[in-house]
Amino acid sequence: MASNDPERRDEEEAAAGEDEDTGAQIAPIVRLEEVAVTTGEEEEDVLLDLKAKLYRFDKEGKQWKERGVGTVKLLKHKESGKVRLVMRQAKTLKICANHLVVPSITMQEHAGNDKSCVWHASDFSDGELKDEMFCIRFGSVENCKNFREMFEEVAQSQGKKEENKDATSAAVLLENLSVTESKSKDEKSSEETPVATKEEEKKEAECVETKPAAEKKDEEPSSGAQS
Image (cartoon, rainbow, N blue to C red; front, side, top):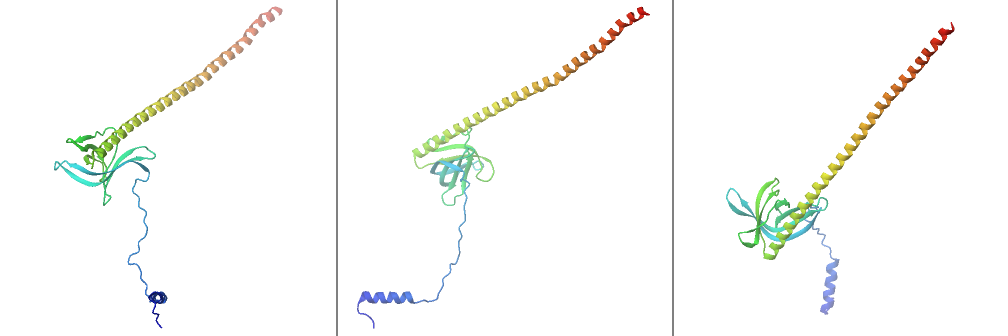
């Protein structure tokens, strides 16, 4: 008999629904498995990360072409210490700029726009090194200023690092040359010493052979006188 109490009736219907088993099984249409995705940036530290729009100058068409809107990063490798500029498109994550930050790169303001700057670089975003001219535009003057200052600071530090590396290499080379010269002198002196010793031994042997002969000559006249 059904209960007249609305709350009790709802509880009975809910209990009946829980006990009822339709036997239907719903399997997923597509089974997705977790896949580890690597970006190539795992061994690098992020020095700068800003949103911007990038352009590349088309030499044939002599015009600027948009490369994409996304985030531009300055990444420093944990072991080598080298820094590169990487920019990916926001939606597709496709790389639209990828090059090392070196002292030879000069960055300038673009056509009097304090939100944009231009530079030349040997870029590898297309899988091969190409000499490209880039223009990047930020949403604010402050972001553009921060990007340019950080870029120039890194470029100068990379230049000092190369100079120190060259100086260290030169010092090691000079040290190796000094060691080699000292070894050569020691080997030369050790080779000359046995020669001198052999000459002295030869002279001593001649003296020993000469002395008995002289004594023999002194004995001959005395024996002749007695006869």
